[in-house]
Length: 328
Image (cartoon, rainbow, N blue to C red; front, side):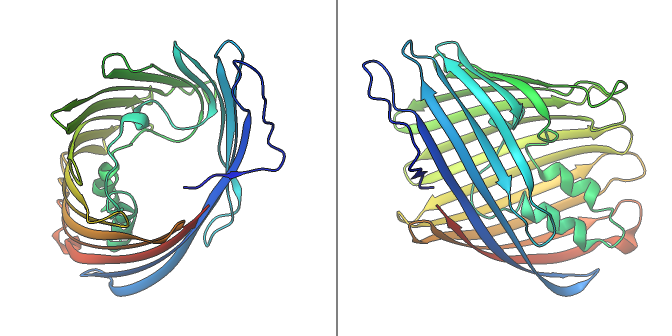
C-alpha cells in the first residue's frame, strides 16, 4: 500500500534524529458474492468495505521510537462510520509497548495466507447457508485469530532474539463483574538454505467460563521462492456450547509480480455432545494487481456441512466471490 505524505509533515533535519512523519492511507473494496447451497438455493449479494488510516511516527535523539495510529471505518452497506482502531506505541531495544484499541498479542502470530479469504469472509458466508444458524458453531472455528475484539489494552512485543519473539497483552475490565482478556503469542523464524520457516503459536483467554471462551492455535509457514505452504490447527472453546477443532492447509504461488494463485483445504469439527457439527471446504483463488493500488480478487470455495443434531440441516454448496480494491 502506498503512503501519501501530508503537506503538514514535519521533516526534522537534526543530527541523530529521524524525520517525523505523518501519513494517510486507506482503501475502498467492492465485493460481489454468489452463493449456491442446498438450504437456500442461489442468491447474490453486493457489499463494500472502506477505511482511512492516519499515523504519526517519530524518533527521539536517543533512539526512542514513538507514534500513534487511527483507523477510521467509513460508512458501508451495513455499518455506520466509526473509529475501528486507535493506539499509540513506544519502541526501542527493549521491544514495543502498544497502548490503546488495537489487535491483541495472539493475532500478531495468527495464521493468514493467500487471497481466497475463505477463512475470513468465507466463514461469514457459511453462517448464511444454514437458516437455523447452526453452521455458525462450526465456521467460527475457522478464524485463526479467534482472539476477541479490539478492546482497549496494553501489549508488549519483544524484539527478535535469534529468530524468537513473543507478545503479551491484557485488556481492561468492561464492568465490575467482567474479567480481563489476556493473550500471548510466540514465534520463531529462520532461513535454511534459502527456505524460509516461520512457526507460531498463540492463546486467548476471556477469563470467564461462559463468555468469549478460550482459543489456542499453532501454525507453520514454509516458503521457497515463489511458493509458500502454510498449515495450522486451532481449538476454540466457549462454555458448554463450542469445542471446535480446526485444521487448514494453504498453498500460494506467485505466478509473476502481479499475479498470485492460492488453494486451501479446511476441516472443522464441533465436539460438544449432542452437536457434533462438521465442516469441510476447498477453495481456489487468484489475486491480480491491475495497476499500482488497484487489485482484483477472484475466489471460489465449495463446502459440505454435516449437522450433527439435525440431518435435515446438512448442507452442500459453493461460494464464488469477486472483489476489486483501490488502495492509496
